[in-house]
Image (tube, rainbow, N blue to C red; front, top):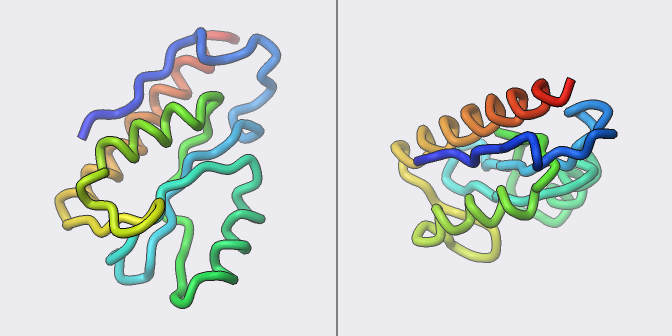
Length: 119
């Protein structure tokens, strides 16, 4: 699975810190049978809301801080659309789970590279 390539133009000059950016996240059930891909400006509150409405335990599995969360989330949903179960939930094979980890890791490297180019 490819990753989302960030460019310096994705960032505003006044972006203070990466940790203040919105997040694209992957929540997962403890057995990794289901993964939810979403985005939020407040990861902790979003997780609490999802967990309270979910009949099974989930945890924050992966995250990308990005100035363009809608684009990154849309890219992920498109890549995973054939694995969609309902809404933003996906049922992924072990190979796809590994691909998702790689996508998040490489996209995070891309974010850091573009962000550091601003400094």
